[in-house]
Length: 68
Image 1: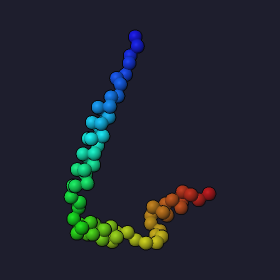
Image 2 (image 1 turned 60 degrees about the vertical axis):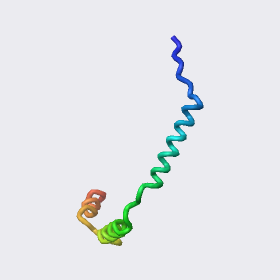
Image 3 (image 1 turned 90 degrees about the vertical axis):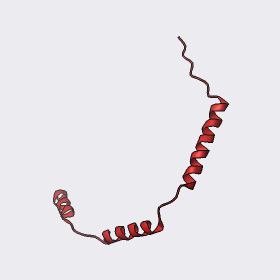
Image 4 (image 1 turned 180 degrees about the horizontal axis):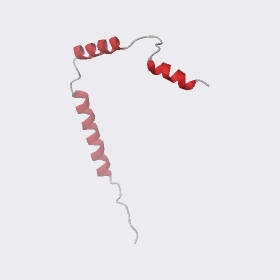
């Protein structure tokens, strides 16, 4: 019993390419998030981040486990 895989026809390839192109066009035309929402989200994340090294409980616990 020789099972043959169906051949990939030219029609299938072009149909897939057309579908991919249509999806790309729809993705390009969908509205983006408002600039105000993006800016406020960036400000909130900037407020939460701190710069520099901080010795937190987690870091101190790691130091204890790393001692020889």
